[in-house]
Length: 258
Image (cartoon, rainbow, N blue to C red; front, side):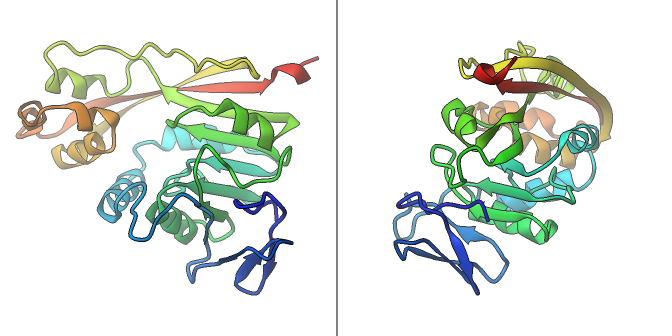
């Protein structure tokens, strides 16, 4: 067990269906098998994706449209793995020791349901309740880059794989929705604590229906900053061929590179 108490940072130990630290802070393990270690919630707060949004994302990914990326990520998992902002755990088909977290309780619930061997917990990216220098492989897909926490949890010889959208990602969809679409710049996150070791392009063409494209669009950051008028341009387009394009960035701790 590599989890630490989000209140006092001491080690958590499992007793039946409860995790406890030496200072007697306790956290119940849900009936689904995950634990909520998110400390910033107030009563009635809802954080992360809604139930409907989480299930829509889960349904879309399980159709295999991002299988090319899943295959490449799976090849890179080794030792003890941490999936940072794991979502519904789509990429977590790993037989070894795996931990995963997300700020969305519904996403974590789906992840645990899909991957029984995974150790899943609800947590915030700014305070990852994992022991320092305990992770061999960290995967980080389409989420904010918190280099200080990534550095802390990763072993000195560990590897961080961060995935960003490629230049052509969803290009055909952008051309339909926007008058002047732009291509992604593929700029790696700025970091002083990590050195970029390699970049791997992963690209595929998928045939996608109108309804599935709308489902995909709702999962992207573009959705929340696009007018309804532009969103409506997807109505009646039928089936299209769509480019999915990703860049896998491999990082090592700068101070540990020989």
